[in-house]
Amino acid sequence: MPSLTSPASPPSPQLPGGAATDRVHWFELPARQAGVREARCVMGEKLRRWRLPEEVCQDAVLILSELVTNAIRHTSSSRIHCCVGLTADGSVHLEVHDQAITPRSLPPRNPGPDDECGRGLLLVQHIAERWGAERSSFTGGNAVWAALARPSASAAGA
Image (tube, rainbow, N blue to C red; front, side, top):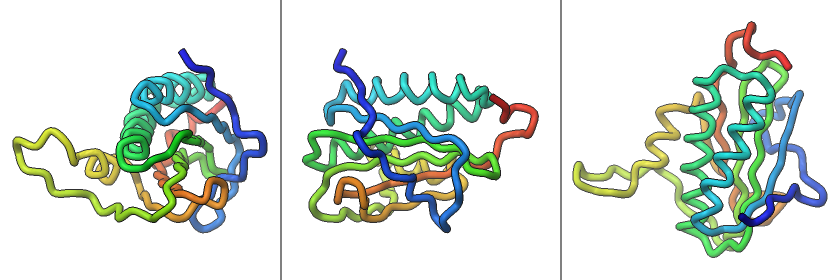
């Protein structure tokens, strides 16, 4: 299993509206299909250490999985940089930074009932409180982000 590394100088998450983060975790992985599983494992472990509710952990891992899969399938990136942060209000913020040299259009597709692909961003749109994409100041590629609603106050400790 390839080792996951944190970026040498990770930037602050590109939180919409400049929201501050209380906790941030960055990791980097190779842009190949096995990286999706690695990202899910790292993200799930980190969120559980932060003692977030299991439902929030599962939603965050699913969103991250879809965003990493898109970065691998739709860009020529060699590395993917992932970030999870807890904002000051307790919401969970996820980012996936790729190395795409051209911006890609990110509206969710409208797949047919028999299509096997094309539902990833629809899932993100449904689960996330909000999501979007912008140019990454870190990689120069895309930074696709999603925010999950603040978990209950009793579960946000650690």
